[in-house]
Amino acid sequence: MKLAGLKSVENAHDESVWAATWIPATETRPALLMTGSLDETVKLWKSDELTLERTNTGHCLGVVSVAAHPSGAIAASASLDSFVRVFDVDSNASIATLEAPPSEVWQMQFDPKGTTLAVAGGGSASVQLWDTGKWKLIATLSIPRPEGPKPSDKNSSKKFVLSVAWSPDGKRVACGSMDGTISVFDVARAKFLHHLEGHFMPVRSLVYSPANPRMLFSASDDAHVHMYDAEGKTMVAALSGHASWVLSVDASPDGAAIATGSSDKTVRLWDLSMRAAVQTVSNHADQVWGVTFRPPGGPGPRAGRLASVSDDKSISLYDYS
Image (cartoon, rainbow, N blue to C red; front, side, top):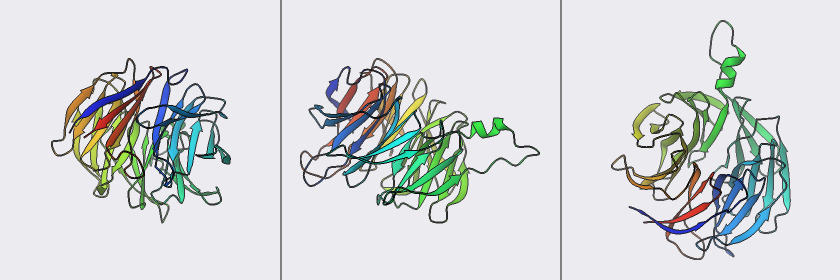
């Protein structure tokens, strides 16, 4: 397996690019790459050419996260202004604006069926679940406070929730915190199940394997990527190789590989059967905040694609084969 560079866009945004995801193809258009930036905009890019399809404004601070509905028709962007903007992909019409208290909106992800949007709740030490039919808050999944004589404010700040991921069957939500803990929830019962231990620094990105609903991958500032059996509460492997914080992780649609982006300015491709990095790509000049594999399906080319975005304001697109 390997990555081959296809295209890079320098100065894709006016400031650091903090977030990226693919909007799935619909019957009428191929998949689009969606990026979010400190410059307060969200941009949609046509695949392979990386030509700019549209620029969305509406946030008054940097965009920290973008998420795409599995239908490809709806997307959402979250900003440091504590608003989540939900919009129609093709018309850019606003569908809903979700408001949260300051610093309580970080990463977000739609569930596999598209009925619920999970939002990492930052300082609230929880994940909020929003119903995508009525755009109402339907559940708050709170991380239990550590038992002790007097829970201090210091403890809750360590549980600051940065990252969130759905299992491919939609039954579990996992979230990653500033203190390195990963919390797993039973969605149907809105119940905390257990922590996954092993990281001691912020967990900025999580993704479940599309091939195995129990397998969870985590990226942490401790420079490691962990593989967990999220149901059995066990760490399966710790993957090392990055020289600094691992900021983003994504799993290939075939489940055979993961890609990571790091503040060491590289993108790495990891072969999961070998549990080792098989390639390091160094075409960004600053830290790599996001890596994202294109979902399969839709019209147009079927080949594997990976995109990466960076503090250097650029986007890179690679063939994955």
